[in-house]
Amino acid sequence: MGRYWLGCSGWAYDDWVGPFYPAGTPAGEFLARYARVFRTVEVDSSFYRPPTPFLVRRWASITPEGFRFSLKVPRNVTHPDRGTDGTEVLARFLESLSPLRSTGKLGPIVLQFPASFRATEAPRLEALLAAIPPEVSLAVELRHGSWWTEGTRRLLEGRGAALVWSVVPSTYPPPWVTADFLYARFIGDRALTRFDRIQRSGRDELEKMRALFDREGRAATSVFAYSNNHFMGFGPGTTAELAAVLGEPVPDLGAAARERSQRTLDIGGGDRAGLSDLPGGVRPEDG
Image (cartoon, rainbow, N blue to C red):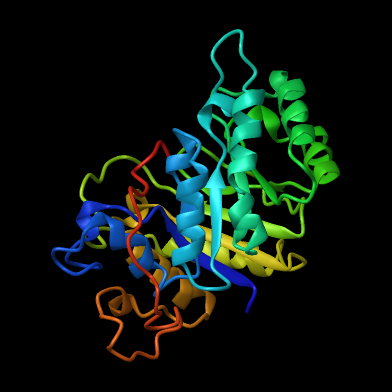
């Protein structure tokens, strides 16, 4: 199916109604329409609350074969309150993913740590790496410069966990390949507040990342890359531009607005029967 898995950080944004989803589309149809265009998504809502087994089953049932969900581990695990270690939350979260694992739709899960998380807390990171089953693909987002040491690199390599290559102000992760896949996030800053169109260029950063994929990341068999609305103003448009920069087929964004009876040649698979109501969805997160 190709090396690159390109998608957006989330799918349930009201500002996408009109420029991406048809006017009047209920939130329950967002994921089904999104999956006509892209073959992967990063789930943000799981950062705030582990998804229920019912919700995960619905995600699995209304997306096409071969679709992949990457999910953030709940913040109660990576940002625990004093006196808690988040192990119970982690166990429930991992259990909730069973419908995705059984259908082959589970992509990497992501441990997203805050910028305040420093290498002095390496024992906590090591414990979490050990707590996640090795058959689950794992990416780790670290933002503090104290982590950029050979010790960190060996720790991630020992687990086979990918270091997230984040594009976010004041964060400069090294382009280490510590797993058989890469995981990149185009995050941006918080200056933009509407997400209905491309509002600024991110071409230079996209091309820099392409060079890293081609050079440092050439040994990786898969590349997962997700675009946040904040990066250029409109996640679907950013992902389409990234595809063009990588020389990949550009997704047909119009496929999300077409009805199932309308034929299309878009790479997302066109009309797919059975893609219907999803309760809830995902919402913007902290990056």
